[in-house]
Length: 280
Image (cartoon, rainbow, N blue to C red):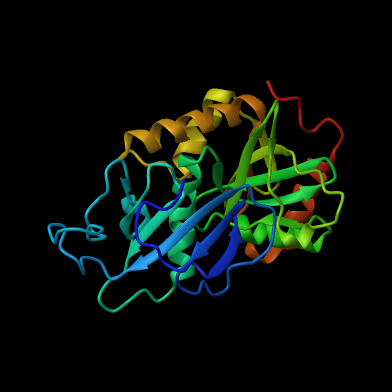
């Protein structure tokens, strides 16, 4: 389906979280290659530069088009996403946006949701048996753990935004360009909810029920209760992920000076035979 209106030149491209992004402004520091199966056009606008009642032509960008979703408050952006998820308008404040790439990262999970894709608030690494995702709130240590596992030989698949695609009975993770050409198993093998505790001296991992997994995914995800459509699709995706992928609470010591050793303990725990049961 073509964009709703405004024939702009989307000459800047990026690929992130399994989505090919076309933008009318440069997106500095976003990767330009990688696996993708979804597309979105992102346009940055000065806002109401045209009154909605100005006669023929498109309405002002700060007028919500029919069927579109306003950008969720969690994105800290003004604008909207078209109902089909393939068009996003971000309205810039008078002083502009300092980091357009960050703005795009904030809205991408919602655009993916409307196209039937999923995005976990997770960093992920490729183990020999498939992809392991580490979910957690900002500051939980997801990126740090993934980087240290990478130093141990398990390459990073995603940092903070992990794409998920339902593929028959499995969940597929689109891979970044850094893993192109490798025989990496892109099946999401397990979801680990990461937390640090000063009372823990060793890595602890406990299996979660599907119901507990759904609750954790919603708590730590990009859920949005402002839009009924977004919420329904996000809940459906969380339900499918919990049904297909084993999930665990993963508690690690809160000891930054021991991070490399903790990463090695996590690696050994996940690499142990039969450490990951079959999904229910």
